[in-house]
Image (cartoon, rainbow, N blue to C red; front, side, top):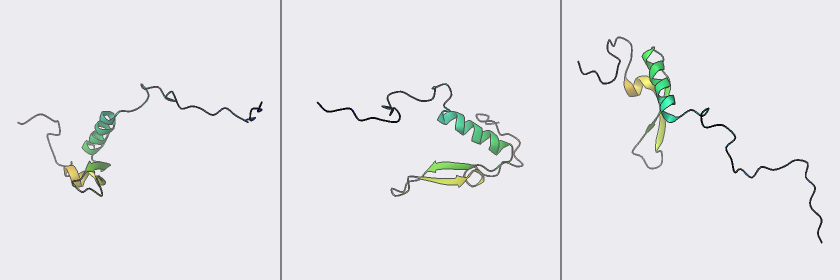
Length: 81
């Protein structure tokens, strides 16, 4: 019979998550953080989709994509007044 190979450590099978799902941030949480930073006058980087096949996503500044947030009086979504 063959002898077992001796290992210095155990190798994980990768079957389970290493982080609890309650700790992981969702896509919506990230977008809300970016929007609140933009409303404060900061200019965060956004990842937006493009119609190009070779570059489906591209990073742009929030002011270029959403416009400048300074000087706007109504920054809440859904109000058409």
